[in-house]
Every structure is written in C-alpha cells, then in structure tokens.
Image (cartoon, rainbow, N blue to C red; front, top):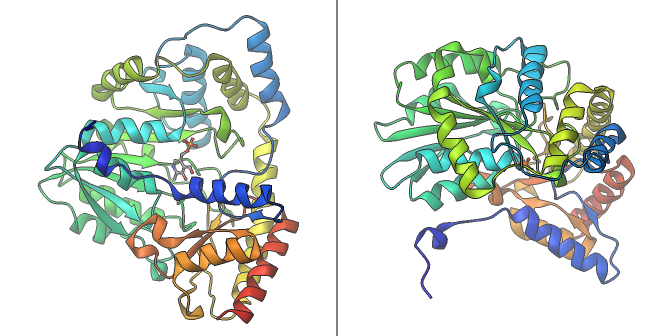
Length: 390
Ligand code: PLP
C-alpha cells in the first residue's frame, strides 16, 4: 500500500518514546525517575474533577457544538480579560482537544509546498513535524542560550521572505524555559507591519508558569495584528490536565469558520464532561495554580543549583515553563547519547536537545515537573554518572 507523501514526512515527539522506554525499564524492576515528560506531577484539582463527574451524572453525554459549549467560550474570553485586560469576542474562541490541535489546525491552514513557516529552534517538536507534513518549508528561528533563550525580533524579521505564510512564537518556551521580553515583542510586532500577509500563531500554553514576578506578555495585547493572530492556550499545564485533552484557540474572524469546519470534519467536539471541567477550572478558585507554580519555582532553584555543580555542566536560570536546558557540551558527551546512557545506566529519563531542533545539540532538557525528592535523587545520579563516565 502506498500512502500519500505527507505521511513519509510526519515526525513525532521523542518525549513519548522516552516515556515508553522509561516505563518498560520500570516494569523490568529498575528504579526510574522521569525528568523527561512535560506534564505536572500534581493531580487535577478536586473541584475540577467533581465538575466532570457532575456533568456525567447530569446526563451531559452527547455532542456539543463543534466550537464548544457557549459558557466555556465565554469563560475563556472573561479569563483573558481578567488576566490581561484583553477584549476577546467569545464568538472567536474555539474549544479544542488539546493545545496541539490548535497547532495542527493553524499549520494545516497555512502550510503547503512553496510556503515557508517560521518556528522556534530549539522548540516544541510538533511545529516542525506538522510543517513538514503539509509540504511547507520549515524555517527555524534560532533560540540562543546567549540571548537568555528568548527570540530575537531582528533575527526573526530577517528570515521573513515573500513566501512566509506563518510565524510561530512560543513564550514562555518549551524546551529552554526562556521568556521573550516585551521590548523584543514590541519590535517584532512593529516589524510585522511591513509583512501584512504573515499570520502569527502564538503558543502561550505556559502563560501562567512564570517566575521572579515576571508578567506574561500576550500577543493579544497588540491590536495591530489581531486580524492575523491565532492564540494557542489550554488547560493541560496550568491546571494539571494533560490527559483530559483540552485546549482553546482564539481565531481572527476570517479564519474561525475554517477552524470550525475542520473540527466538524475531524473531531466533532471536545469530550463534553471535560468541557464542564474546563469551565470549573476557569471560574473556580485559582489557588491551586499559584501553589503549583510556587512548587515549580522551588524545584527550579534546586535543579539549577544541582546542575551547575556537575562537572562540565552550566545551566541558565529558566524564567518560565517547567524545563531547564543545561549546556552539557563540556562534559564530552553528545546530547542524545548522554540522555540514552542516563536512562539505561542510571534510570534517569531526560530528553536530548536535538529532539527539539538543530540548535539543541550540546543541551539536554530536564523537566522539573517532578517532586523535589525525585529531582534530588535523579540529579544526584546524573552527577555521579558524569563523575565516572566522562
Ligand atoms: N505547546 C507547547 C509549547 C507544549 O510544550 C505542549 C505540550 O507539551 C503543547 C503545546 C501541547 O499541549 P497539549 O497537551 O494541551 O496538547
């Protein structure tokens, strides 16, 4: 059987392969500590779980509108207004099954052979995979350690050509934990005025996971690009709901109906009880979010301290999300062999930097969405490993 060429180009996310290998080793009796996968180690707050149970008991078992239930779309708009003062019309909000789905829809909308799509490198691996799937040309925008893992507006703008159709931004960022400062975003948006044909996909899924008093800068704050901005966000990271498969997007009016039709064709609607849980997440108490962020913050400090004490390792202090991206070049190891050896020899799962892009060589990604005790044990093993196996 011959499938279409697109399926020869589709990639994947190695974090899932590492998770499978870590699980297999654990099943064989190894004490494996997972600093690979990017998901909060906390359970979903109980009032959110209860809202889903109630929806099921109340008989909310059928389809909803493809774009989601009206109170949830209104709650998303209200939440964006509460947090950023942004004016968002609930009619432009779409509830989708996970943050990834917005990415999928947006890249499908703009990607085709001959088109160029700019995306962060190192960055979330699905950006490049989906761009290649559509046949478009992926154009990496470098995310540099010396720049605090922020995007450079000048470098980004210099990569735009007449063939550029979409620019993907992500701050706070996976995998480096970088946050792009407001001044840089101001410059970028100002420069985009000269490229009115370029759409922007802003992946803000980590917008509440920020440290040191940093305030999130949303692209919604820039009225001059609102007619070409697709906002990606969701519940997975903020409310510890990765397995619920919930996300939302805000679309420009001109694109909303295209996205809605894609939903009708592909997934009909998001799981109905999950939508009621999402509503409870946005309208209920927010203290669990603050508690989780405070825990991530404490772990972040431990991670940086322990990593920088290792021979040949340096680590920039992450500003957001729950990842550290230590530079391991001076250990003498390449990234992927080091990540593989740490897992097989020491039972510590991490992800090699090249799994996030060409500029990832020399780094590994450490997810600190794990208990402080596990982080200490895992990094203790890594330190010992580097001490003996250089
Ligand atoms: N965007 C970024 C930058 C991510 O790191 C992730 C998940 O790791 C996603 C989107 C996808 O989120 P979801 O699990 O809601 O599909």
